[in-house]
Image (cartoon, rainbow, N blue to C red):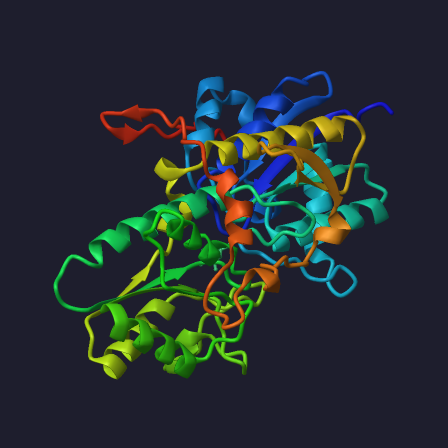
Length: 415
Ligand code: F6P
């Protein structure tokens, strides 16, 4: 099959990761090598929103060295968005506008870098373009610290966040037992509906500096049960570390901050509640109930932008995911997301696995219940065996004056 001739549009969407830009680098650097087919490479400002507003950058004008630096630059360099496309059967306004922009700029390759919602966006756009008879190759490039994308062994971005979370838990452990008095620490980890990231605190136990209790959103959260768990350990040791997911919910489906929220919790365009605040609510509760000194620590944005603590395996795989999207697109594939399949050998190795967008869109992959203990307050060895190989290598991030050297893009707007 002859590859389509035209231009490529790449966009990033959803919450960023510390390695999402490595995927951008993979797409850009590979695509720029194929100028006989991909004539121009564009980067959308703030994902789909930038395309709708005709705001995108000419990546061909960037220095190759700076594109390489993207591998070690956290956050979405092009800017991200949380913009939900309507069902085209009900309202096709945005789709018509996208088609108009694609036609105007001869976009024949559309790559979207994101998680579940972004893969849904990607899928919807592809279907609309096909129905409109417009030839365009569409590829999903995965990213999410949440690690909840269907069909892939793991998601780019997860390992680096997991490495930071495990490392920080170990460091907090050291600090949280300095005094001769008692201490309870609640560490809150992101991950919305899936507990992969919170489970990463379990890696710290492998080094003897881990949490006593781990609560994932896969299991209904019971305040009284948690209090009893904490009191028991506190009575025995005087020190308790609790790792809790921002996404834990009571059996009635209520998030912890909602138990005390005076106003409605903010919701994004996908209907996701803005989480965060679980640690401080639980810390207040435990302080009142136990009288102990309690600290609530929310890892917040740090866990997804800590590029100084990124996993080099994650960086390399994120780059590979972007590069592979270009290679597969030029081979004639469309409507796939790049994923990974783990080799069964004793050494860690992952192979590429292309997953149909239809299968990925809107499906969440959770931590298997068999990996969680029957009390619902700890994680088993299976998780350690799964996650540890992903975090082993150190980032090769370049430093200047002891500080990270991030990419400096010119961001030349396409007129
Ligand atoms: O993209 C995933 C994620 O990082 C979740 O873990 C978290 O709940 C959410 O994004 C936070 O989103 P925002 O940055 O829009 O507040």
